[in-house]
Amino acid sequence: MITIVDDSWMLPCFTKQMIGMDCPGCGIQRSISLFLHGDIKESFLMYPALLPIIFLLGFLIFDMFVNVKYGEKIKLWATIIAIGTIITSYIIKISFI
Image (tube, rainbow, N blue to C red; front, side, top):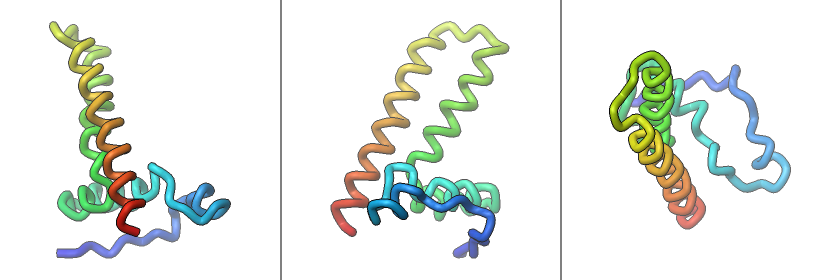
């Protein structure tokens, strides 16, 4: 099932407007909208880094209130995975467009 996303409220990508090329964050707004509408698969296909970013932000908030034994290592690896996913998906995106 493909969810139609109303993008009238979304901010334009200034990098795309200025140089005509997608930025590493292009697609995150639509991905968030798809995620909030319950279309997880389409959200992941739109912007694969959203799920690691949600985990990272959720863990950062959780770690503020609960002392996690290996919290610093989890935060480090979650950050590495999120940034790695952003960079990898961006390279794939610009390679095939």
